[in-house]
Length: 358
Image 1 (spheres, helix red, strand yellow):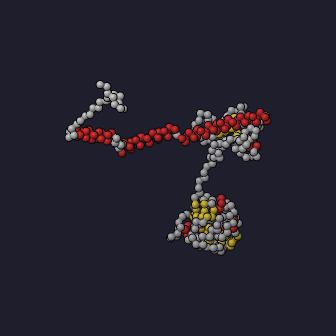
Image 2 (image 1 turned 60 degrees about the vertical axis):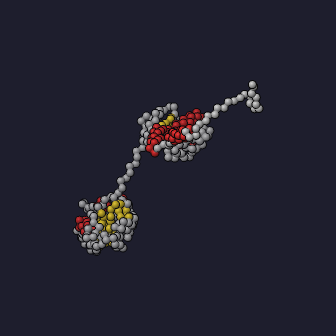
Image 3 (image 1 turned 90 degrees about the vertical axis):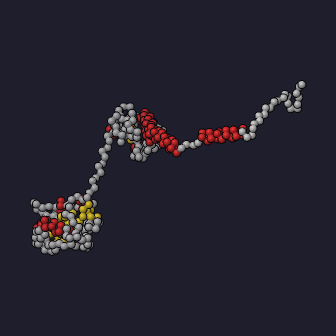
């Protein structure tokens, strides 16, 4: 018999499985729990150790890439490529000028003695190129006077050194790449000799004595003895000292030759002179009016027998062995030549001494 029903063309058979509630439900529950356990096991995250190892490996790879690529050197190479291109373009402009004028230009005089770099140079160049790190360094255009405009060399300093296109024998620290007019060969510029750094002068002290004597000081030896006895008295400033005195005659000695080349300060650390040359140039920075006790003695006269240039001048009380006659004196408050060459004093009078540390 044919089966007909609204909405169905043919009969469908649905199989229904019945199970026992008490046993089959337990089986399904057990299987569901096992599936959860498997799922949880396979979806767990990284451990801390695994994460640290991964980070370390990434760091090593990054460092390796930085070492290989070396961004600083890549920047230098890029700037060097620009320098080479700049010099080639300027070389073309120089040849054009030579074709028009039958000589090469003095680029500096073209701009009133100013550097040409960055200047407009029409019709040959809209702007003469500058070194990429100008003004730290710039290109150098050499047009020797003897060339009379017939040849030139144009130099640059490459940063990435050595470079296969460097001038043979050129230094990495000076101009080492060049182009030139076709009629000469490129030659390296001589590397400038660096100016040596002067050795700092030692600092020495100077004082005026708290006591003195007449013109008979027992010569230079006696005068030096007075300086040292005062400086090395108990609680004194110590050191080895010589008196600022000159003597005359065949065995005479100028005061300037009795003191070392040094920066001189008073006992209170106030500057007197920056060097021996400064000491004997006619002026000093401050008057020598502090004694070995660092007391301000004010205006007093000092035996010197010495001119402002440090040489013997005038009388010397028979080379500081006599109370007869006169001897040259200086003034403790003077900062011009009078600090050592103020006047002549009677040898019978009592005056003090300048003492210079050795």
